[in-house]
Amino acid sequence: MSGDLTDSGSPSAWKITSSILTKGLPRTRVIATPGNHDLNEFFGLDPTQQQLREKDDEITTDIEKMPRLSCFIVYQSLLFPSLQTYNNISLSKLVAEIPKKSTITPEEEQKCFKQCKDLWGPGMHETQQCFASCRQNWQFARFDYLYSFRDMFPLVYVDYDRGIAFLSFASTLYHSDTVGDNAIGEISEEQIVRARKLLNGLPPSVNNWVFTMHHPLIRQHSDLAFPFHLSDLRHPIAWADRLYESDWFLAIFLRNDPNESRKLSDVISKQLDDRPEAKAFVFYGHRHRRPLSRIG
Image 1 (cartoon, one colour):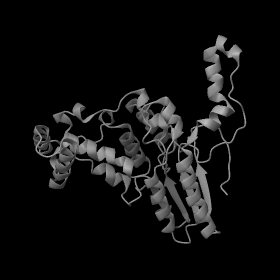
Image 2 (image 1 turned 180 degrees about the vertical axis):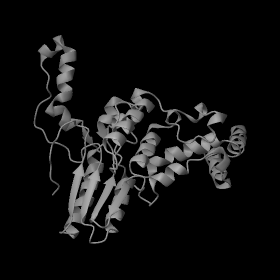
Image 3 (image 1 turned 60 degrees about the horizontal axis):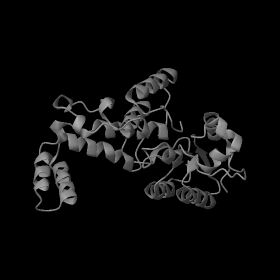
């Protein structure tokens, strides 16, 4: 599934999506990727650690008090528990180890101390206050852990028996507060480097590669002019609706950042050149249409 599993990323929307998928696709392993609607803070800010109360100290998967990306990971782990992060951590394990007050380790305290020093500098009064909060701040540890989920992509599953590898990218992690920014995706350099390493590590028998992402990998070319006429000033709302459905808008806005998308496309093309027997399939959404393209 190529993203936009919800309209606004709200907890109620995630619950509806989960119910539909688990009831409609029983015993089916679902691999998804987050879309801009799933993560976009334009629809409302994410919860913060300040909203956690002492009664929440052992309750780790209350999606009412989790960032949107964490909600995606939690529900993806339910739909496919053995799906892994790029560094071989199963999502079920990732979710099971969300920090509780009773499980805060000295290492996590030290990490908190370092972040205090980086933020305030040595010797500052605020630094000492920050240190004090680290010694008992399970809220900080939990949110620090939850926000680290953005560094776990691409998600991976390899079916060695069938010779298929699945890589799920996140193209909307860093543009998450305005509608305009979310129209254009960005697959980070880190994800591209990890993808190259993962593909290099696949055995020759795994020669079918499936890549999922929300924003289209390849920009749709269009020679069309900007769709506007002076008469549209009389009906601006109707014109805006036509604009969002126009080929011009699809080509210019609803895509990935061209620099990152070209890098990922080059990685895939290079791997296909090196392994002529391999095939790559790229699935994406975002445009709410069904176009087909070919790499190479």
